[in-house]
Amino acid sequence: METDRRSLRMQKPLSSSASLQLYASDNPIPKSMYSVVYDASSSAANQSRMILFKSKWPSPTDFFEITYITFPTYCSKCNNLRVIDDTSFDVRGQLSTVRDEPLLMQNLEKWTITELRSNPFHAFIGTGLMQVIGQKIMDPDFLSSRISQEIMAALQRFEDMQGQYRLTGRPITNGETLETIENIEVRFDDADQTVLRADVTVTARSGKPLTFTQYLRVRT
Image (cartoon, rainbow, N blue to C red; front, side):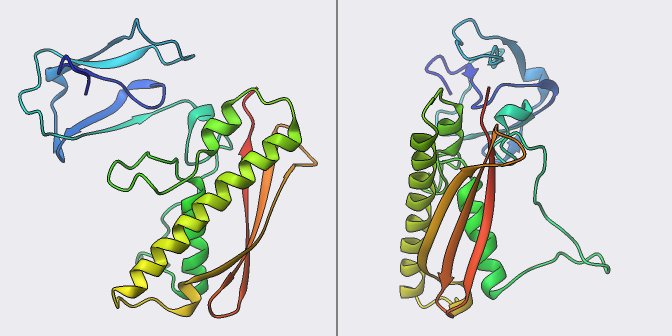
């Protein structure tokens, strides 16, 4: 919240105000208490709206959560690809869960696609890929190097966190544990030169090699 105790700005541009849901410390805030207004101080493209409370917010200790729809080019889950890997259910309607190497793969992908500092309680999780692909970088080799560095740094933080987790004695299998980061190769997709693909190869503590590919679309 801004210092006026009335203004809230979103990290991404708001596509539809009807989709917006606002919470203060996990409690829903009625729409009658605020308006979505033009943000005269915004300089970002499409980011022209903000939340304005009708009166000063009474509690200085509340944290706010905003759920809303943004534009595809700003989507941190799909990186403008319009495809999301999300929760799935089995034929009996039960939530599908994974363990061992599939769980490690899932965690690595989540750490790669999550935007760094997007979670205020775990600000170290994620990468700055959205910022990198949003910059006007003309040198493709430099862009590829920046993307590799972001992914490498995120996976190293994940590896450190797993080490701390194991020291607590909590259960984690060798298949779920990252042992080494073998290779990160970033290149432009042959079929679409606006799309970059990052092929990441790691080895689990079980000795099994794992590879996943993260696609990124460069903003034009």
